[in-house]
Length: 243
Image (cartoon, rainbow, N blue to C red; front, side, top):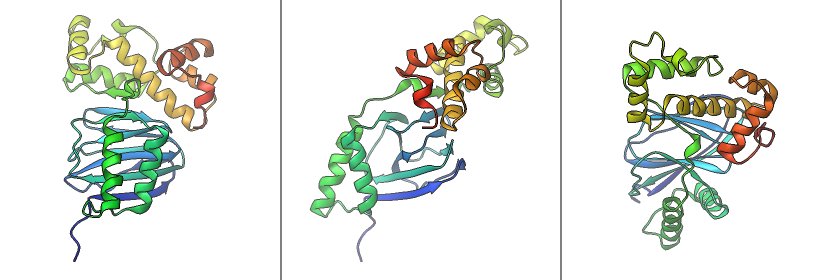
């Protein structure tokens, strides 16, 4: 009887909604949407993942996926391959083909020379892939900072500045700012901008009109919203609509 494989795959098309994919212990996971867009939630935050990117999840990190629309998931499980943290990575044409080929051919065994070459090249390309940081929304764990974060997540378009957000949270603005920076690397205003971007990207992926999305996430005009998206992602809201 052959031993347990070194690479497994999970290929399925999901409708919009929340998905908890198989999470066998001890396996590094690569979450890739071949078509559609997903948001991956892990304990330390969430990542919006458009086509052309993937999430690299270390073994033992629980996660779930929110699909903004009908989505073709092509996930890999890698045994004996180590990732030090969860990250979103850009998927080059070569990495895309490697992922899709590995999904199609799995299970793979490293004692098979052909399988071993494919797995080694996949590891190499995955480890060298460039991170996509603007799509990360880290979540603070400090109760005061988390209360402010939850307020933003509940209504990304809520008017008012940082002072208004911090009012009633149980700490002064300076304290909230310090705790946000310590736990997320971002100030409150920067974090809110990132949260608005994440909410906007999910809405755009569902096919919502950019003008409606702009108002929903707190931008007075579509042009101001477009400028933010271009500054963060180097593209336009229209190019992201319905991805």
